Picture 1 (cartoon, rainbow, N blue to C red):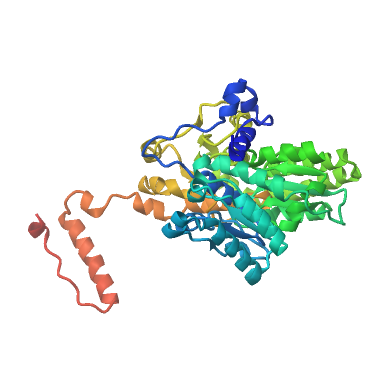
Picture 2 (cartoon, helix red, strand yellow):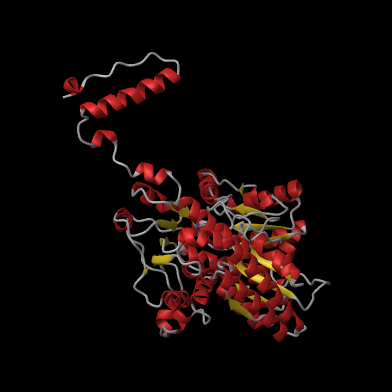
Length: 497
């Protein structure tokens, strides 16, 4: 059995997943991947998933060993942001051609590409991604990476997650395995302290992590590594010295959190920075884990003081929107951590949830939704576009929050829409992020364009009478005269008939 097959079976057998623990041994090894529907979009491959997890590591050169199209389809596939290095936004690929594939020149070209990156950019590390083509022709990227690391004196990390291996979620897990095997634990820091933490599964979308970090800074808590949002290679390499960890997206990186706990004794919990209550609860859990690992208990009091201050500020800002949004109905078509964290955040200010997708949610995610909504009748695994359109056009929701792929369903139904997925332009995490989310919902719902687009078009109404024609003519003449144009003669009502 190949090393990749062994790795896939290992990540599928995840004891930290409640859904996985409920299966028998045979079903557990088969994993959670569903058979793809012929003709339907697969939702991303393993290579895409690996790139999503690792691309936001900002000072690393990400080299895709493949024909050009693979890198073109995956580059900058998330709205992550960097506070410093920009190397991660430079596209690197070996750009294999048919001749090189046939003549077996792939490994030679890969080695040469690593050397060129070393000489031109001198990064702390190069991540090399296997793809379908190079996996099929048998290029041994692990051997090439090992030789290049010895030759050039830098970290060269093989990411063995070709697209044919499976789904995007599997790629997330294989990327985490690569970090465990080749990165984490390779650097020993000289500044480890009792208040160091890791945050896993935070992508810093639209700079959201920058709304959370100042809160932790005020508590004296240092983020040793945020994986992967706005991360640096050396921070991740020394992440094994953290005292506690928070998992934001468990479907992607819960296995990384569990294995770091087993190897280095770093306890973790799953939490969310979306919504006022969830942000406060996350800060409390971080402080409690640090105290359990030896930190001074006085951090608990400082945490409560900070929470009280920030909650008071946030609720005061939200009062201006409460009356305007009370009873407004939201349809949430997303998944994962957002399926419950955003639900909780919106319910806090009096918004009604008429439905939320749980397609990518874990068992724990679904249980949290049930606790917030008191039932599961508003949860749906997936909803076809025609059903979304029918629901919105019937006026059962005042706004839909989703990703860009379903925005046109809402727009066709003449319903306000707000981007809540990775392409969003505004940060929604933390106390300030919650205020921004509510502000954007308010702006979308009360935008005057919706009352205009819902009106009947003039040509869909009854025939113009004499009075309506005269009024129309007078308005038209006034507009034309103000523009310096000669008035157009309007036909009489008799002529119109």
